[in-house]
Length: 187
Image (cartoon, rainbow, N blue to C red; front, side, top):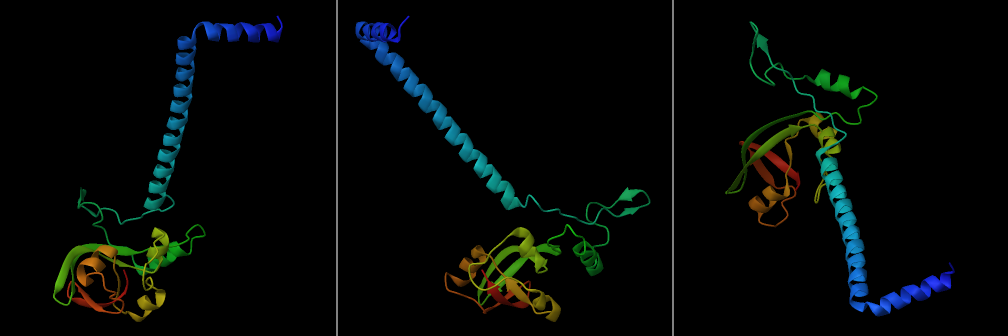
């Protein structure tokens, strides 16, 4: 069969049934558009999941002291002796370790002037910001020299900065975290 005869037969069928031809074409267009939309939505969802996993630290390994056991009974998670500075240094010397972030946390109140805000308070070393891949808006992150000199330096988040300082820059201002005075370096 020649192509010209097949084309003529198809055009004649289209002219004979215009509504059926239109509905068929509409079904094809809607089907293709639906497939394209679903592919775009699934690609966007996959990227969002990847971003969320990355923000959680997909390449981080968290190590906590285990449970203390006495007379065969567990005292609960993280009740064993805490890690020492030597443990942190030993881990830091491992070839696969990019950053070894030591931290201890609790809750408390941060005070600036006559304003206070309840929050979680973390005591960290300088590698903590590298391991979390956090940037600062203003000021600087904690540095090794702050640890070495024993300076009480605070890096605060945007929520605390907004609630304690009402939008004004408080870089270098004094704050108290659980009644310990700190200099604020960064929101």
